[in-house]
Amino acid sequence: MPTATTNPKLNPRPKSSAVVPVVAIIGVSIVAVLFLFWLIYVHPAPDAAAQHYTFLPNLNALLNGLAAIALLVGFYFIRTHRVAAHRASMMTAFVFSSLFLISYIANHALHGDTLYPVHNRVYYDAYLPILISHIVLSTVALPIVLITFYLSLSRRFAAHRRLARYTFPLWLYVSVTGVVVRVMLVAAFR
Image (cartoon, rainbow, N blue to C red):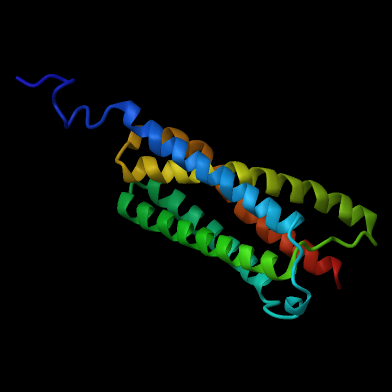
């Protein structure tokens, strides 16, 4: 008679098998964040590209907004126990966020960092905390989102649910504030 420790349906994988992928995800996330920091703050943008692909910041905001919508739809689906629809929505959010990251890297490689004009101090004082929280939380969100996806794809649903409680609001905040930061930048330059 199979016991809980020998029955693969009751105990599909030992917990230690998740350590290596999680460490790899954290390592890749650290490298990605360091690369983005270098790209934005150290690497000079080529002057010739300054007028090319100026649509990228707006595309970034659009992709962030679409990711936020997909996250909210996915949250609704899991609350109504529609797991397949939840999975599809979360994959859609992941695709939009991945496309955002590609577009974001291209934009900063071509144009460098966008500095906020300080002609309206009150507006700037509202913008800065949103930007800082967006940047800090996006660096935290990257590995957490990837680990949450890994737990789901590896069928560790209990751990996935526990982590997703934190991943969802964090990812949603980063997506929404990405749009807010872009809107505030557009308004500041008018």
